[in-house]
Length: 382
Length: 142
Image: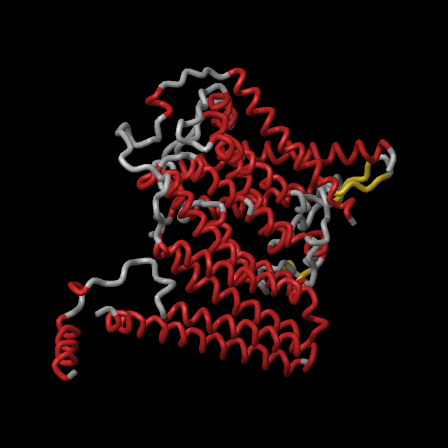
């Protein structure tokens, strides 16, 4: 590699970094505008045209605000937690292709930091790192509300992580690739000539599973129990102030963007989309941004519509519905992919029959499981 | 192979540098006027009665952690299989179905035992009259 390659690599990384920060500013403003729209109020107005600079204004304010360490806090851990919140959030984004490539100085430069051969696994590993930031921030604060928030969120995040992993495995089985670029490449073309061949059509249950688990993983409403302000003041970041709080906030929104970006890449065809022939590198980026915004809008819409879910229901939803559904869908994907290859069109019929049959059996089993439990426990208590 | 990770490392370094540098810059520019009330644990202005040091937690959280380990290991076993299940064919699929079924037995057991319930067991007061009568009958008979 010559010095030009190094410079281009560095430029690519810095560009991605600042694109993410820029996206963050826009996305936080958009969320406030969307939610204001749903509650028929104007939302941020003053800073810049239509309040678009509100995030910068808030950031400036937090930057110059006092940020103290409570006396009872475990100082080193308390100081490390904001760093732990931000760095994995950036790292998770590094495998996502957010555009095709541009040819500069005779070299093809992809809009992706690293096309790791363990793509999906890397994403799963990095997104699960966020639980450390939340738990350590809450635990090290030396105060009651943050501790409760962090303990809750650890249980919540690990519960929904299993469902998320199962959704990712179904996609992996369907496409047969771990690399992000190959997953996007596999989603080219059309069904019947006009429906884009995106994964979310054949993998719709996995798509839903991923969106819901993603909502819980990023602690967004209605799964925002770690920071339920009516019960826990501000949850795990109650004792954080000033720029340290800003870092936790930044990490949270970066994770939201990353989750939307992963859903786009795995299920919505990534940067693919029809475009005119001039500036062929710009359109994929616009498509990618548009798809991320659609998912983000759905997330804000859910926030504006759903009340916060009760904790026992949250756990029951994760363990009794999402995980069995995920396991079932993994096996169903395996059957659909394998049997037609082995037995031709009859295999497809057998596969569908098997899936429907086992699904109905499972539903029956769930019904039976729910019934005797309440009786048997009452019988056992005396 | 390992060269693939170099850009990721650089990005991680950049993110780390950004956080540390901005925290440091902020610490130079922001005011710092601590007072005992400010530094006390937040409790809506009251003196905290109990502090989290040495508090005990509901055992439910530990149960969830243990169940997570079971299912996460299952997920981790699924990953290598998912990469090569096309080559393994029907045998691999049946094998994995058997494995998932085995873990599912444990899952059903936990569910039957009420390990997935978060709320408290119902108190005797909440039992219906009919159930109470049934129990009395059982007591008389036994």
